[in-house]
Length: 91
Image 1 (cartoon, rainbow, N blue to C red):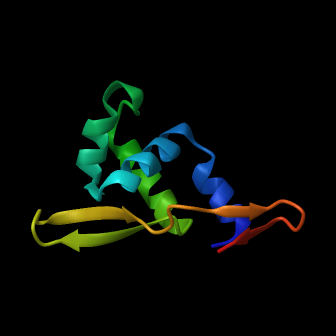
Image 2: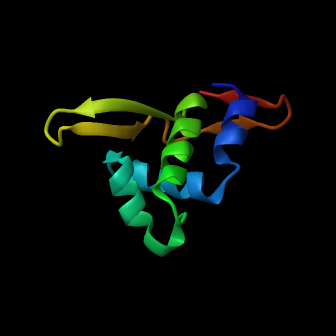
Image 3: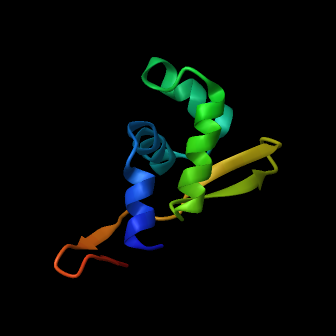
Protein backbone atom coordinates (compact mmCIF):
# COMPACT_ATOMS: atom_id res chain seq x y z
CA UNK A 1 0.00 0.00 0.00
CA UNK A 2 1.39 3.40 -0.90
CA UNK A 3 0.55 6.89 0.30
CA UNK A 4 -1.55 7.86 -2.72
CA UNK A 5 -3.68 4.72 -2.40
CA UNK A 6 -4.25 5.33 1.30
CA UNK A 7 -5.27 8.93 0.70
CA UNK A 8 -7.65 7.84 -2.06
CA UNK A 9 -9.21 5.28 0.28
CA UNK A 10 -9.66 7.80 3.08
CA UNK A 11 -10.82 10.66 0.86
CA UNK A 12 -14.52 9.93 1.35
CA UNK A 13 -16.73 10.20 4.41
CA UNK A 14 -18.56 7.03 3.39
CA UNK A 15 -15.33 5.04 3.03
CA UNK A 16 -14.09 6.32 6.41
CA UNK A 17 -17.39 5.26 8.04
CA UNK A 18 -17.10 1.84 6.42
CA UNK A 19 -13.58 1.46 7.80
CA UNK A 20 -14.83 2.33 11.28
CA UNK A 21 -17.48 -0.40 11.02
CA UNK A 22 -14.98 -2.95 9.71
CA UNK A 23 -12.61 -2.21 12.59
CA UNK A 24 -15.28 -3.65 14.89
CA UNK A 25 -16.42 -6.66 12.83
CA UNK A 26 -16.31 -8.28 9.40
CA UNK A 27 -19.39 -7.43 7.35
CA UNK A 28 -21.05 -8.09 4.01
CA UNK A 29 -21.94 -5.18 1.73
CA UNK A 30 -25.61 -5.35 2.72
CA UNK A 31 -24.69 -5.36 6.42
CA UNK A 32 -22.55 -2.26 5.89
CA UNK A 33 -25.45 -0.59 4.07
CA UNK A 34 -27.88 -1.38 6.88
CA UNK A 35 -25.52 -0.22 9.63
CA UNK A 36 -24.87 3.12 7.90
CA UNK A 37 -28.64 3.78 7.58
CA UNK A 38 -29.33 7.49 7.11
CA UNK A 39 -25.66 8.42 7.50
CA UNK A 40 -24.73 6.48 4.37
CA UNK A 41 -25.42 6.74 0.67
CA UNK A 42 -28.94 6.44 -0.67
CA UNK A 43 -28.13 3.52 -2.98
CA UNK A 44 -26.62 0.17 -2.07
CA UNK A 45 -24.47 0.22 -5.21
CA UNK A 46 -22.57 3.14 -3.70
CA UNK A 47 -21.53 0.90 -0.80
CA UNK A 48 -20.33 -1.77 -3.22
CA UNK A 49 -18.27 0.83 -5.10
CA UNK A 50 -16.82 2.22 -1.86
CA UNK A 51 -15.85 -1.29 -0.73
CA UNK A 52 -14.17 -1.96 -4.08
CA UNK A 53 -12.17 1.28 -3.79
CA UNK A 54 -11.07 0.30 -0.28
CA UNK A 55 -10.09 -3.14 -1.59
CA UNK A 56 -8.10 -1.64 -4.48
CA UNK A 57 -6.34 0.69 -2.04
CA UNK A 58 -5.27 -2.26 0.11
CA UNK A 59 -7.25 -1.24 3.18
CA UNK A 60 -9.78 -4.12 3.16
CA UNK A 61 -9.99 -7.58 1.67
CA UNK A 62 -12.92 -9.55 0.32
CA UNK A 63 -13.51 -13.17 1.35
CA UNK A 64 -16.28 -15.77 1.37
CA UNK A 65 -17.76 -16.40 4.83
CA UNK A 66 -18.92 -20.01 5.05
CA UNK A 67 -21.11 -19.35 8.10
CA UNK A 68 -23.01 -16.47 6.51
CA UNK A 69 -22.85 -17.99 3.01
CA UNK A 70 -21.94 -14.63 1.49
CA UNK A 71 -19.04 -12.44 0.49
CA UNK A 72 -17.76 -10.32 3.35
CA UNK A 73 -15.09 -7.71 3.92
CA UNK A 74 -12.47 -7.36 6.64
CA UNK A 75 -10.02 -4.62 7.39
CA UNK A 76 -6.37 -5.34 6.64
CA UNK A 77 -4.70 -2.58 8.63
CA UNK A 78 -6.26 -0.98 11.68
CA UNK A 79 -3.42 1.45 12.19
CA UNK A 80 -1.60 3.49 9.57
CA UNK A 81 1.38 5.66 10.50
CA UNK A 82 2.38 8.50 8.21
CA UNK A 83 5.86 9.98 8.10
CA UNK A 84 5.11 13.51 6.82
CA UNK A 85 8.77 14.48 6.50
CA UNK A 86 9.35 11.74 3.95
CA UNK A 87 5.73 11.45 2.75
CA UNK A 88 5.77 7.70 3.30
CA UNK A 89 3.66 5.19 5.17
CA UNK A 90 5.31 3.34 8.01
CA UNK A 91 4.31 -0.22 8.87
